[in-house]
Amino acid sequence: MKFTYAGRTTQLSLSIAPLRIFLAFFLIFYLSFAACIDLNNPATYGGAVVNVSNSYYINTDAALCTGTYSNPNGVTFIYVNASNIVFDCNGSTLQKTAANGQYAIQVQAGIQNSTVKNCVVSKGA
Image 1 (tube, rainbow, N blue to C red):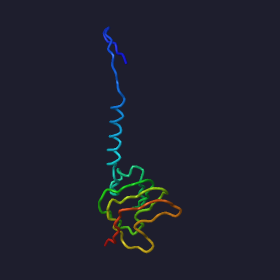
Image 2 (image 1 turned 90 degrees about the vertical axis):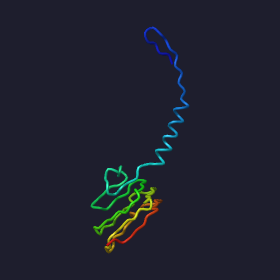
Image 3 (image 1 turned 30 degrees about the vertical axis):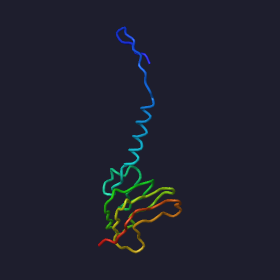
Image 4 (image 1 turned 135 degrees about the horizontal axis):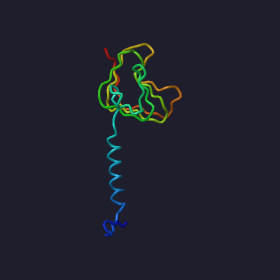
């Protein structure tokens, strides 16, 4: 590539290889530390979670920020709402109050090949 300024021409040679290496490491780093979802902070939902009256619908792959989440309303807490996704609680505790017919985590009818993992479910007060 040639640049001309004030009558002087300079040859500049660019190599794409270092840029490719940088992008590869950036993507690996970014994907390794992808943002987690805090159910208490809607700004972290990123389209993966929809909150409807304190029931959370998981629509894409999602990982919770490690913590304890409580749902005192007596409604089903988490709905897995799509096929072929992974919902990872990352060791989080889901505290649920007792209510007949309500669940801490429910996979919607017709959903296939989805995974729920690393969740601790407890009955709250």
